[in-house]
Length: 195
Image (cartoon, rainbow, N blue to C red; front, side, top):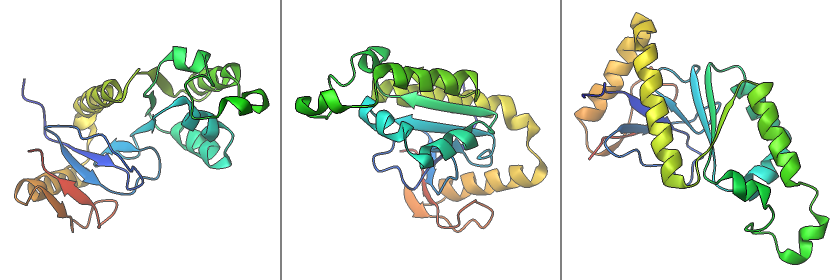
């Protein structure tokens, strides 16, 4: 099956991003989430969490509450967890928190599960326990392709032209380049062509 060509947007703040082998990617600032699709940034957002400690820390931050509120306004919003439900249930075991501090932890596994349930039921955000980084990356790639295939017929002419320019620019350039395509959300995007 020949997949359509589209560009996966990786947020500039992702320090160790997923690679999405055989896919064109661009590094650009996203208002919501860590990953999206060029031209569909207001339609799809994937937020990535690497471990339970990161999630436990984020839950209490006002900034993350803003992220959840923004995700709730996006049609296809996901939080992909690179760990398992078991990791949450045994928290803080396996975390980077020293054992002598465990009695003072205010964020419990039940509190984490309550938040995950609320995000799904009250904010309509789909949350997946992926068990590993590679599983999360594979699921993200599948979700992005599926959403693109479903929504590409709903593109307006201007968005379609922007996508074509992005893809053509990436195809006719070196593996990683600075993009000056003016209609991208950030004109300083870095586009990577699949190897």
